[in-house]
Image (cartoon, rainbow, N blue to C red; front, side):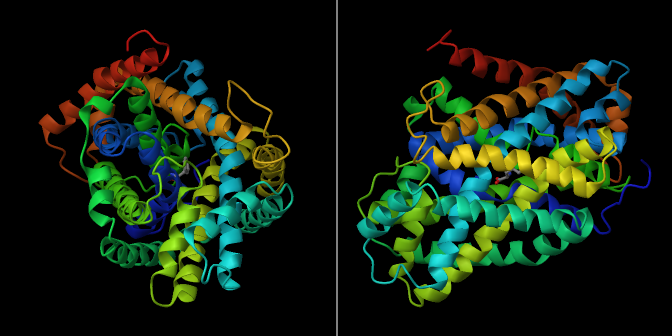
Length: 448
Ligand code: PHE
């Protein structure tokens, strides 16, 4: 286990972790949950969850991985003799497989949009027409599945080539480019007539909107976006060098992740309000607004190809890292080689993705707790499994792991001020478990 590949450079560490963090969670899920949870109030709650709970938990995951030098399911036993804590790793693996099931579907939509962009299919269409086309596409049982298959194959090819080469190379070059494109789009969006209303929607909190439900959605989105509670950061941590600075890495990743999500919001809401659309549309939000925005910019053909290529790559770096969790588990647990492990995982994901994709057509009447298979997978993973993973992780780190070990690990290669260390421990030990439990309880209707 000691010959695990290590990230070669500091930039490699950050770029790969950002590659995993920045994905459809920022570009697709963030705007849609902001829209359906009341705008500014949600954003504030979300930032609170990232900074106060997300950061310390992110550091904790990195630490567990770096210390354990093995996959998420067994890393915990290297810090505690009680094997039961491995359940956190298993929960994360389950969550990653469920997320992959519907993430692949949305990624497939992105690839279809890339294909349509190449064919210049959006040109001259009104927002209404673009929306109508999306609904038609979604309700066709076969076409979306074809793109899911294409996306699965792309994952397979990259995954069998191994972790450092595949992930590092792709994200090092393309994530900065995505960032630049988002800035260009946001500048354009801000000149639109609905810009003021859009910005107000996202940045002006109406505190009365903060309910238990909004809090849970914000917590789920924070964890989802930072890839917390799943074991991916544990797996990445296991590839870190011993002297990597956990606080600085976590902070940089969280900031970049927030900025990308905010940029997506600053693009999408001004456009929505300019076209007089409702922000509450749900999962189709970016697929309707972005092509409409581009029809109002110069060179729409160029922008749309570039944009959807980069979103597809952002999705790819996230799915690859999601797969990495389960693959390194199957690989090490069942002593299968990487290729076999990848095949097993992707076959399982293909089944889930088929069910998710068909939940917009053939299986639209099939409901679980009043949700389609797609929405159910989204809800159960982001709002239940990830926060639950975070809750258990905080209890484990806060109550089971030796403080001196934590101090040593958290402050390697940096001088962590004592006060800050105490603050982090306080959050992990008390605040995170209590807050996450309260948010869960509020969902059971105990308050509100
Ligand atoms: N954070 C990724 C995104 O925002 C999704 C993801 C979740 C990736 C969990 C890995 C693990 O799209």
